[in-house]
Amino acid sequence: MHSKSTRKKDALNLFYEGYNCAQAILAAYADVFGLERENALKIGAPFGGGVANTGDTCGAVSGALMVIGLRYGSGKPAGWVKRARVNRISKNFIKRFISVCGSKDCDDLMCYYRANNHENIKKKDHCAGIVRKAVNILEELL
Image 1: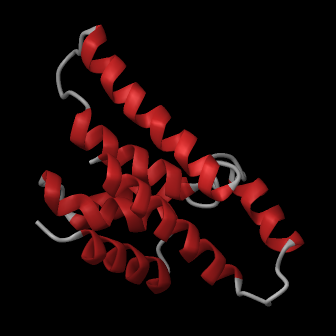
Image 2 (image 1 turned 90 degrees about the vertical axis):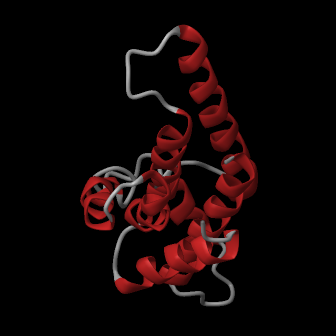
């Protein structure tokens, strides 16, 4: 098992290679759950830019929720206890992400970026920071 810093580096490297936030996070954890990296990248593909580039839920949130599902979800019809657990952990992730980043939606995160970009931080670096924060929160919950 890789360390937290290795998972974060892997996710950031994937992101800077050109994969979206969801792909980067899901693929960084794929080996933990026996998921082939290529399949993780394919699964995460439609979640970038806020789900299919619509500006909705940030890809970093989507990717992290997929990892939470792999860790705490069930591959069989789940009873209410298992569903409640994965939903509780997922809601906790979302709540903490919003607390750290200000929103869970890509459009809002990009508006914040445009409004507060006093240091001329590149968009890619802004989003990489969000990926980093998502992995930090995810690591605390896994």
